[in-house]
Length: 291
View 1 (cartoon, one colour):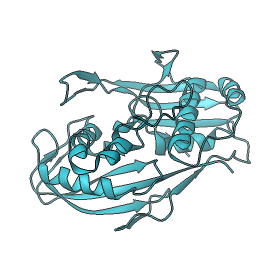
View 2: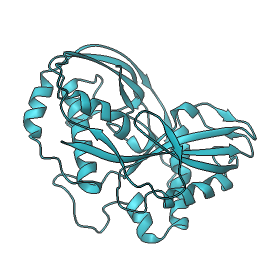
View 3: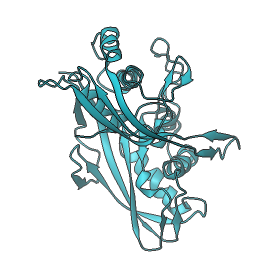
View 4: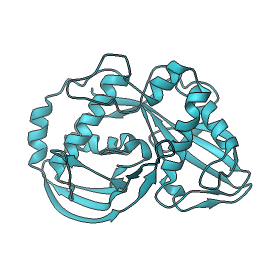
């Protein structure tokens, strides 16, 4: 039975100062602070494993120029929020690298990130604890490395499915033939999702999936985009290291698809955990199936 394994952590903090998360940039605030302090907090090999994956390893899949980073952030609920002193806040972290240690490097870095300050005003906070969250959103406090990863089942649904509605929860950018698409046609959406899950599993998990990807892609292309209501979110970020400005926006909204969707539904559910499209490490491409 094909599946995808990963860890889902929730980091809880208590603000010491006012901590501000600009609209559309909450995950960028977290990711930026994490990247700056990671190199100074963990040993060199650990930094390379998390932030420069693939460097010097020589195990690059065909056609893959850059390895995807083995984690992503989920912090959209903090967009535009200012957390007042003594109030609590949290964000989620999904980790795809199954090699130990999984939790320790993130815990040590985020404890330091919180002490040194987050957001434009560098508001300080304290790391209060970490929870392991399951696929049903049940959370349990955790102190040590988790024993077993979560498993997202990719097995085809037994019941026929002819219509699916998706909600693009966070800005999503999809590319086809090197060009950003304006509509989430199903063939393009599934191709990007299939490639991402397969790549993450092949690089960091149980290994490549033994599937006929070309045939799946041809079947996906026959699924029709029946209706969509999208809004383009225009957000930019400025690199603290280079000073360059980069767009981190994309479309949000919903789309409805029609066709033979049974084999694709488990993959679409997995999109919530892995993200799809560009810049997923910043929380982009959070796609949810409207059940």
